[in-house]
Amino acid sequence: MSNEQITVGTTENWKKEVEQADLPVLVDFWAAWCGPCRMVSPIIDSLGKKHQGKVKIVKVNVDENQDLAMKYGIMSIPTIMLFNKGRLVDSAIGAAKAEYYERLLTSNNISL
Image (cartoon, rainbow, N blue to C red; front, side, top):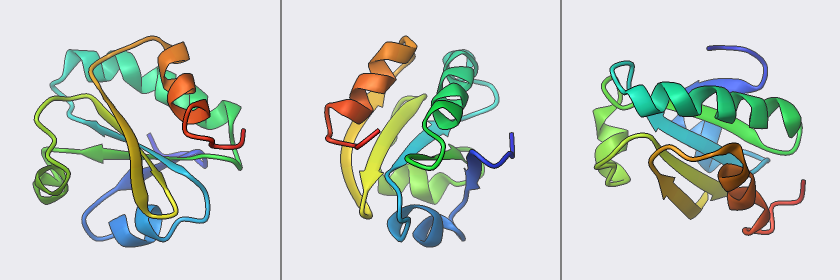
């Protein structure tokens, strides 16, 4: 899961990778046992490739980073959150088609 478009988010690197990021950040809160998460993962990966250099993708395993899941009130996964300039600007819960996540970016004035 680690390539140049995807960053593994952890409690330790959250501030640097999300809150202080120069680019808007699309965060995928997921778990290995979650079927819908496995369906969404390639969609999020492809958004990272499509918008490389314009949007950063961070994936957070909620089982390994429960404090982040609690901080953001993650009750269902997958939960996709969009951060811009360190601020949470939008979120989506559950699996959806690629167009839905694309709209999440464009409807929040993320310049793609």
